[in-house]
Image 1 (cartoon, one colour):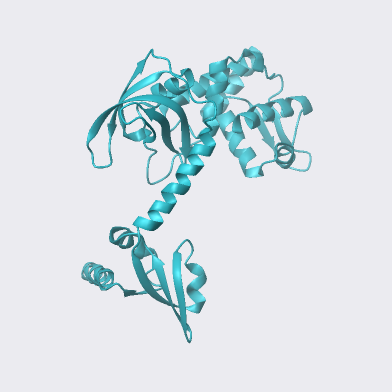
Image 2 (tube, rainbow, N blue to C red):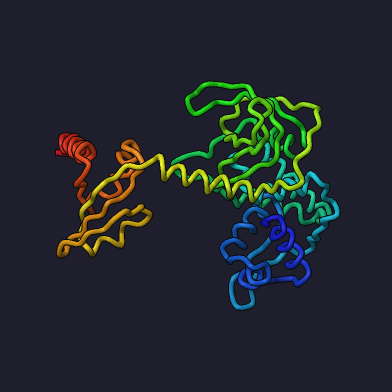
Length: 318
């Protein structure tokens, strides 16, 4: 868990004075890249970690700084843990401020003479983890959802279905899952009397309720999510099938990564691949990554679509 690494990095560096990123990675059984990401998170919140290059270099705390984890309360530790699950200061402002407040509590034992250096570091270094071409999706109700999960409070929500219809639900939250920076609420829906998965960005409003409920002892959030995930993938394979035949030469076959190949036929230096593109709409979106390396042979509607789009581009650029 990332919470363990964040705390362990601080304690290891303090106890040993200085450690190389590779040694930290081995001690914590993770990658050097993960160590540097964790250090970025700590540094962004104001923890004075220094990185010195060279044979005698390494990662160390600013001289005079002392880690004091006893200052942290339960909610502070949860903030650190949830940060490791995917909350970023740049994407969820309120959560980001909570994280910074939590980590800054570790600075209380820092002598006042070092405050000038900390303030200078905050002015001179900025860590921006947002993508270039798109912003993270805001989840306005995330804090109240997290509160309901943590405190085991029932929740009333207004939920946008995929067809844009809004429905009202009364839920018993069982847990939150983060996958690729998208948040999902696993909750028992009292209206349908079933356990359901809700995409948090579609929750338009929430109301916390002071009503008790009990999560079954045998329930495992991880096990439930993995079962749901397997079922979802199987349904997609059964229901979302759109066969496309493409032609390419053998030398370029290795460039077709991530394509679900159903069959393969060789004809000299050429190969014909039948691939599943799930739907016509999905094929129209994803086919552009193949053009220049492959030819769309079938179906005719997709081949015609590519032909029309290429013709349109020719008009623009020639």
